[in-house]
Image 1 (cartoon, one colour):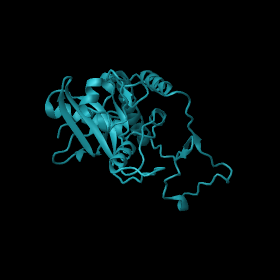
Image 2: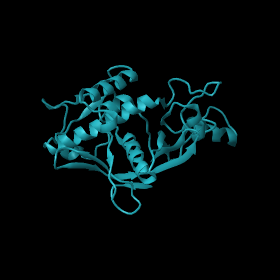
Image 3: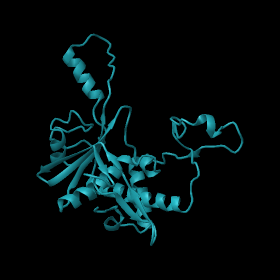
Image 4: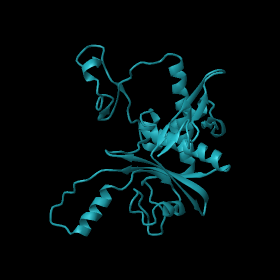
Length: 260
């Protein structure tokens, strides 16, 4: 575990200036950071342990519903650069399942076959940089991450990869959204926005149904619909456009690491 914020051995927090006097400081704890020296130089990989299902969806990131891993990536990027005195590039971000899994088969299988089926079920979802050398440094066999390789060793389109340019769009958008959220909180915005996107909604895992009072059968109650407006690439394009419209650029939008 790697804490970020304040305390012994912590990485610095992410800090955003909301106005001349108030700063937003983001603190927390990252489950795991792997670092390595590769052909491309110093690199790091962020991992988050999960006991349930986990995945990354570009539209959920666009709507601000899944901010965790990208925030961790920015924390590690800024914090490691400060500690090392030199930048470290990110290799990717992954969910690692910490759970047992029951495998169903139509016929009897050997112990080795069962292990192979289990390994496939527990492959780590997430995104890694679309570079064959980087992918090999993470998982030489590509057996443990959800990346499919072509015969020439290149990553297959559509697997869990993102180009460096796509990562830049995601991280710039994430930083802009974090700062925008801090500004909303500072202005007093605290409304409950009960979203629904496809089959998922904000009430699915909520523990407060008994006291909430939200009931679709009562006039005036409704979910805030968040449609998947198109292909994943369109979500990236929308993120880039919004960030540019807000005047947020790569050099200024990432969080600032504060030494302490």
